[in-house]
Length: 349
Ligand code: SD4
Image (cartoon, rainbow, N blue to C red; front, top):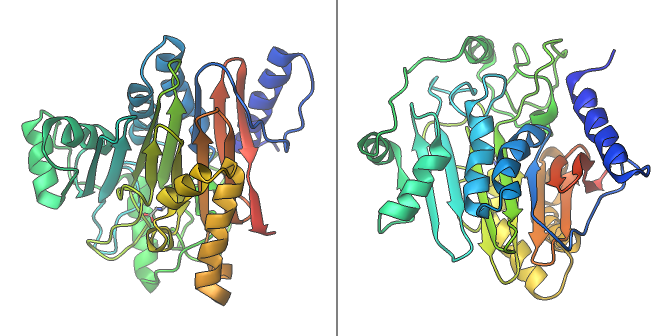
């Protein structure tokens, strides 16, 4: 049986073959786009998100507008775990984190935000309309309402309610490696628990984060990251995704990077910023991501086998690279005539 993930990968692959007229290996990463805009984003859901970003990039629009519009597709999707349909914290509330950064070091972020559908857009307003970089909790919500964002109903989606009821049976918080690309709502298990339960035939795919970076036709870079965070996390917990320098960093002279996976370990090494600094020293995006992953693994020692972290980066030359601790991390790439999912390399296979 062909599942949705394989279908997307195959369609993306065949469209590449069709457009380029030559066969490219699905495993072979495309690394350089010396001309024209490009957008990359984390996990399989990035395929749809990139389409949203591409509409803007293709029309000659700004990378900043593209990365906002792109991840809004995922935030609005009812079939995924980014946004208000996502798994709640352990007290049963969905809390969202997001950030955005442009080519001029302008950045904005919101965290622990409840009942607002598009946290990335609130983050952009923080960037553009306040003297601050980050707003959290009720303050972020008040700001969003004042800016005209509707306050949504405080209610779990039916899938999230089911997952939460199941999770409550054991109330165990255990991150699962690559949960982002496993079928949604694994009955009876925490979103990130290590014992993978039987897979649902829903055809939907679970992920709780999307990070996106893009270069526009002018060669300017921007990035965004949005998440519901780890499912069944402690109330008030923030990961790396809303933290500038951890879940996202953009330096228009060098490149842009975003992270996914266990946020605590991304924050520990200021992950996305570290990748940018390594690229500044001349490393390729993939080499810079790999070195940062190695740093995390060195710190975590034997515990590294239980966590997944991945970085995805784009440099000023339009070269793309990614690296993960464990196999299974994929990213979506879109450029002129190309749309595909790429499986990233990893330290552990
Ligand atoms: C977090 N980094 O909240 C996020 C989780 C994630 O795919 O990336 N999940 O720690």
